[in-house]
Image (cartoon, rainbow, N blue to C red):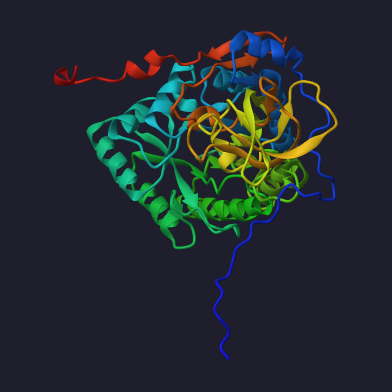
Length: 448
Ligand SMILES: *Cc1c(COP(=O)(O)O)cnc(C)c1O
C-alpha cells in the first residue's frame, strides 16, 4: 500500500545550547573603555553612542605594520576609507603614516580635505567619473583601473590634456581557491584579460603602469589565499619586466584580513580561528621574496587592510528599552541599538556585555533593536545575565563598516566619540537632528 505523503520539515537547530565551553558568554561587566566609565559616557553623550579608542587603532596599526616590516623591506599601508571615513579616524591612520585608499569621488575629496597629498591617494573602484579621473590625473594620484571602459576613458581624457600623463595600476581578480570568487572587480588573471589590459597600457605612452593591485575578498579565513594571489601578481610583474625592460614599482595586495569578530554560523569564536597579521605577512612576503626579484628591484608592497585595523577599536553603547517573553517562552530584550546603526549584525554575532553588575542567573535571550521592522535583530540567541529596563550594554568590535554603512531609517544617527591616548573624550561626529534630514528635502509649492 502506498504510504500517505508527508511533507518534509526543516527544523532550526537550537542555538545557545551548552557547548564544550559551557553556556555562559559573559562573566564580568564591562564598565570602562580605556579607563573612561561607560556610565559617564552615556550620561554625557546619550544612548546609543559609538565610542572609538584611538589607542587601540594605533596599537593595531603598529602591530600590523611591524608584522610586514620585520619580513620585507618596503611596506606601505593605505587606509581604506570606506571601512570608516570619519575624519578623526582617518587622521589617526594618516598620522601613523598611512596613505589613503578611496573608492569614489566623494571619498577622494575627503582624503584631499584631510590633507593627504594627491600622489599618496590610491583611487580604486568601478565608478570613477570623467571629472574624478581628471582630478586624479592632475593630482598625480594612483589610478587603479577596474575595467576596459575606464581604460579607454583615461586614454580619451589624456588626449585632451596635452602634456599630462596618468599614473596607473590595474586591479586583478583571480582564482585563489576561496569561493565564491570575487571576479566582478578588475581584470581576470586566468582568462588573460589582465595581461591584455597590461599590453594595452604599455602601448599608451601617456599611461604609466606603476603597480598591480588585487583585493581578493574580505574576512579571508585562510592566509594561503594570499600566497596564491601574490604568486599570480609576481608572474604578471615578471612578464611586464620581460616585455618592457622596466620594473613594476609596487604590488598592492589589498585588504581582506579578518577582525576577531565571530561570523554567524561559526562554532568557534572568531578570535580562535582567524589568521594573525603574522600569518598574512608570512604568506605574502615569503611568496614575493622567493619569487626571484633582484634584491634592489623588489617592488614596494602596499596593503589596504581595513576591518582588521579598526573593528576592535569601535564600541556601541546602548540601553535596554524593554524586556518581554516571545510566544515560545523565550526571553527577548529590546535595545536602542538597531540594525540601522549596526549593519554588521547581519554578518556577525557581535559580543554583547552588560555594563553593570549582574546576578549569577543567565538565560537565552533574543536581542532586538528599536525599529518597528521584523529585520531588526541584533542577536537571534545569546546567553546573557538578566537585563532589565534602563540597564546598559556594550557591543564590541563595531569599528569597521558600521559608521559608513549605517542608514538613516526610522531614527537618527547618534553621537560618535573618540577616547584619545590620554583618555580625554572628544565628539567626532555629532548626533543628527531632524534638520539633518529635512534640510535636504523640498516640498513643491502646490503641496505646501
Ligand atoms: C573594501 C576594500 C578594502 C578593505 O577591505 P577589508 O576587508 O576591510 O580589509 C581594501 N581595498 C579595496 C579595493 C576595497 O574595496
